[in-house]
Length: 232
Image (tube, rainbow, N blue to C red; front, side, top):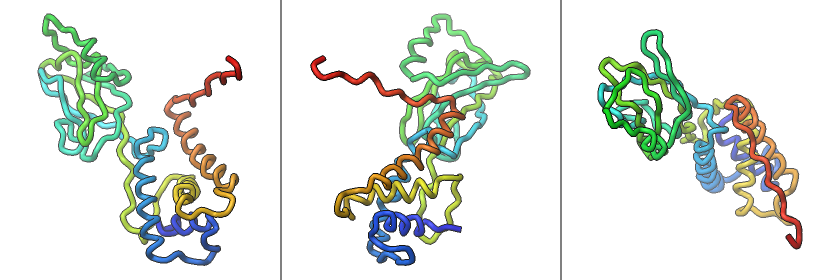
């Protein structure tokens, strides 16, 4: 089983700083591990790189429209939530669900001049606040409201020790060492710059993960817009 330190070593091999079988110094490893942690953390913000996805039900409170979601929030997820992507609600044999609105959109929709309540929400909105996400439902929950089930993803578990074992989905180790090599390249420049093959390996190995998750999530890749012609 690979260790986090093996990823760092491979990245230096990719850059040609060391040869296969050689080991970098502890000082270089510590510096590269910091860059690695920052890169890994930034990937946690990308929905198409998320593998820690959760579908969890939360009880609503009668008359309460505003909640906080995350570790220790009024909707206590136990961990920090990066982004909420969808919702369903159920009570008995009744169900409702939909996509997540922004708080601005749900405020515009929630013009409830008669103060009606409902067992099941008709709309759910939230933001991306840190460390607790602000979440609102509309209309206000009635007495004995249903359960709100949220679809969300949580941060990737950042490595803390280079000697720890790696447990990651398929394709991740390859993407990590190639992309770490690119992240380290400004500090360990070689004559002629980053080889095109290394850049392609970094992009392609990450793209495999992104495309797989995008297909599952129903997210279409953005198409490039039309290019302006000289003189236009």
